[in-house]
Image 1 (cartoon, rainbow, N blue to C red):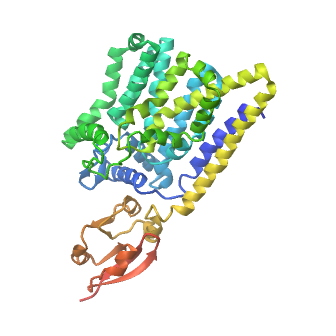
Image 2 (cartoon, helix red, strand yellow):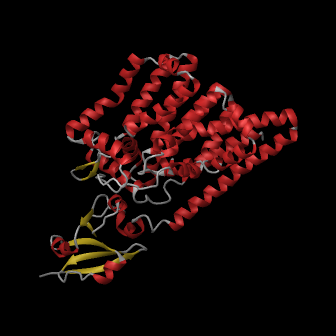
Image 3 (tube, rainbow, N blue to C red):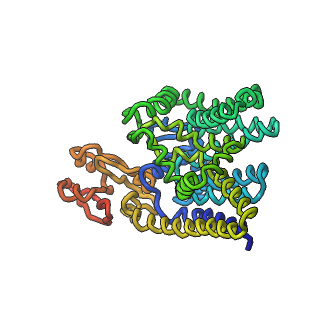
Length: 482
């Protein structure tokens, strides 16, 4: 089997491993379960305009595109873990296909195979593109925008220019203005570095392109503001300015801000792009002249600007997540593929035996990633099952959906809402427990182990433990006959 074919097999295996394991572990709190529950509510309500955080509570934190694809998957495949994650896996697979097609068009099939292999073996890509979150869809949209712009610029393709504007509009529907800002930073850095700012601007079909851009996203924004007034102010000002400039921002309506030290985004990149981030650092230390020479090529400068754009944007931000670096990952993968291809060409011209050694090292990385990521999935299934999801506790009543309320005291995880089909209800204060239980002839009650030891349950109900997990106990409470 040819070396490139081996890489294709490993690439396909990694994608298939994720596909076939999407449903064998639960949706985890907080991110996955939250977005899956929002999509479940969309299917339940058949309201495809406003994502709902809870009954009568609109979700203004993100535009609806990622919710649409999850809800559509629910409609087709049913409401379960596999269908919740499938749409996001599909976004990841589509990104790989897009990168392959783009690279094959401009650099040939061999480098296209290398770049796809590198992207799929990046730890962050492998993990994030099979999670219920906004970032896989943003990854696809930003990749579509950056690849189509390059084709518009280099091939004078009007169609590619229109696709670029459509992709930017899609980004507005996935994550909002931050998507366009990331794309804009990448293009601006490259254009200034290459001294092509004016030519870059002239290459785009602005009149028709802006029309495509606005038509893609504006109708939903207007409908959302009309249906739930206040959305645009919260989403644009709060989520896109205050969130990133105010450390520990307290305006988040749907959770807590993620406070990190400024500059942490670069450390996140090391982990997300692993193992290739460390391989790049090694090459920078051992062969700086070769890499410096590659930086003089216009395409490579474009890829560098694309790869670092997310980090440039979020360097001074405190409220960040590791997934924020994902939009630059395809460019990084293609850059590493170009570096590897260049090294192979040097090996052929100097010492052919070095080419074989390089191939073996490349293949070894792939096999190690294949084995390591399989172990990660196994560890996640065994170790996180009871720690980050309510399914272990609720599984005895989850299928079919419970017909009576499931009460949580003081804190109600999103996975509880999802796995109870929305029956999980929050008792905000312990003092309310008796009054609320008295309104139900039968109900379920979830207590932490500490609550089980310290709380005195109402004498009006008979409460029996029916399940226990690492997180707490599940009781069935029946009102006593009077």
